View 1 (tube, rainbow, N blue to C red):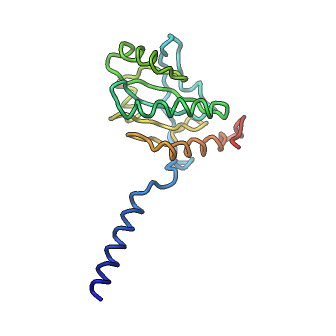
View 2: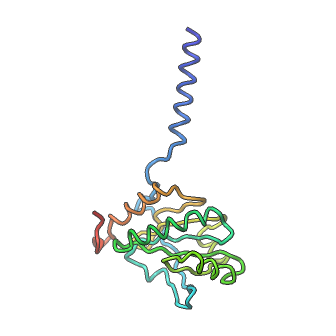
View 3: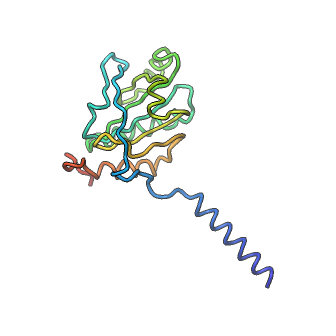
Amino acid sequence: MLRRRVFTGMFFVVGLMIVLSAKGPAAITASDSRKAAPDFTLTDSKGAPVRLSDYQGKVVLLDFWATWCHGCKTEIPWYIEFQDKYKDNGLAVIGVSMDDDGWKSVKPFLEQNKLNYPVVIGDRVLGERYNVDSMPVTLLIDRDGRIADSHSGMVDKDAFENEIRTLLRGGPKNGAPKNPMP
């Protein structure tokens, strides 16, 4: 009898540990609790200005990364894929490199990796505004310019794609998306 209770108790604890360690549903912040994303204007690798506010009406994947960050290099191909797959539905990816030496490291990286979205160079002040204290940090900004989710560290690709799809299906407060998700 005692063995049965011990075994049952251990089974319960192991089951609980599995449940607690499993990835839950999308961690998107409720719409009425979202904070506005701080606006910025930075220059991309071609010298063109990139203003976050110009992306109003789109879902923005804002990726803070660095060339020395292994997790960042793992995620970038996913973000290239997401840009290709969802751009017609209103997704826009923006990469913000936090490399200390700026374009010196980033331009060769871009030439080798052929990113399909704009990349800008961030600084300490922008990092503080977005609470970037490690790499990578990736945010999802809704069509109304509010932060729907923020991930510190590598994202779970499938769960993150589900969050993107969820945001793309929802329109801005005052209307539906131009190209709704199927």
